[in-house]
Image (cartoon, rainbow, N blue to C red; front, top):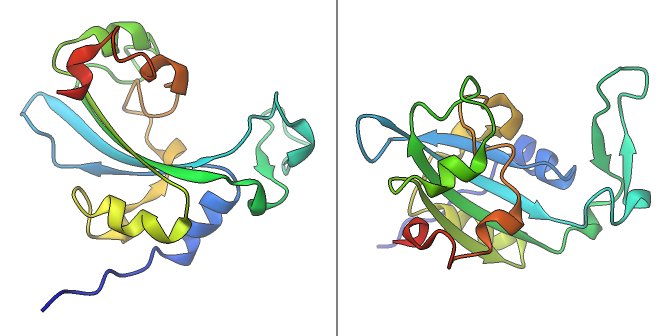
Length: 162
């Protein structure tokens, strides 16, 4: 008998609908590594479509932009990331070095519908209550600063996809 897939918690959907990603720390593949699963809504950037975003913390020195309308989300990406433990916020955000490391791994699953997210997460995560706003994870050089164009070059880092 097949087990029903539980839906994502409403708080997690709210974060995704605001244009931000969510993440969870996973069991690492090796002792000196960290692993994460990330769910990213696919939208046009604030630079490409500034009218789609607004600053909800306008009085702060640190603006926090969110989507005006979740209908501008065109799809979702589930991204698995594994890298050495040393590549954390103290290391910095030198993504080239982290991506060039032969032990770093990335997997991507792209989908158009929000309803596909739970199924895409299942190979790595079954307890969706472990998902948090991705900015809560500062112990990864790739989690919050990796740009799509950096991993859309499989010929440059072929080991990532092994």
